[in-house]
Image (tube, rainbow, N blue to C red; front, side):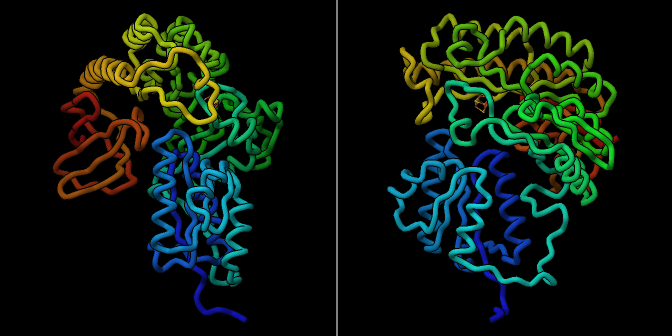
Length: 438
Ligand code: SF4
């Protein structure tokens, strides 16, 4: 028997950009199978909650979201990182319909089919080739791999998502091309470790438009650079071959922007974190990169108050920060993640010391950032418009990734979203820039 209205699925997406990409895939598959996506709980036949399990506050947020979906709708399927620990979900909410883990598209779809069978109508339920996206129309995340071969002691992602599995380069390029054809102006390349792309496949040769391409970050960056849009690389580890990306940046093929998570600078803490990097070498490389591409913007993240961090080691980190002069920095006070080996380390840092160190760290970086941004005054930058309000437009330059970095505010103009404009910078604070249309 044929139903006249398609079954409706509500969707709640929590967590990092990687989880967002998972959500997009699930939503694309749902639409491809003829499900409608419901914007409200009460119109949905069931609700899928894509959870995050990275730190305690994210776990709590995920559990709250499941509770809310159960109260409002009653029929809930849980997926995502927290779903990998089904015990935790089921002990809090025994009446959820199903629990599946991260990156488990097939298992989620299987549960949806079981509890809400699809309505097949291939003539009306066509999905555009670029799929369904949750980001605004003009930028999109491009996930190139799953999992991670590192074993950083504070992280449980390899445990949740397994070892590195790189997507075939032909598939990645096809997806990128579809996105660009659909109007995307900026591609944000994401993975757990972008410079490791292809290691698991021994850099296998794939094909794009009949042309051989190696599954390797450099060849990927080169090919993406041909698409004529902004290409931004996230989560790049400072392996030696990263140097090969710099000429591509200097030539304007990809954005001169590197997001490199350094996490700390003290050799002892880095060793306890099981991170390969070495602070002095990092400083050397930073100055080489700046020589090769002077406009490069470097973003990084750090953890302060890692177990065993002494005042002296923290000061090593501050000295590094001072010397590295990074453009954008995110920092977290260490928070023990259940199941992470770092929890076993001796001498945990008391909460108030962690908070005090985080404050000192952010204060120093705010000063660095304010100096860096004020040096842009009088310069003209190309800006991609993200939002428009009354008598105001907000965009970003190559120096800013969406959501995490700063913005460029253009007062007195209502510019089209998704367009590039030239803006002369007239004012700066420690985070954002203001400017006038040229
Ligand atoms: S923090 Fe370390 S282990 Fe976790 S995903 Fe990143 S590189 Fe892999």
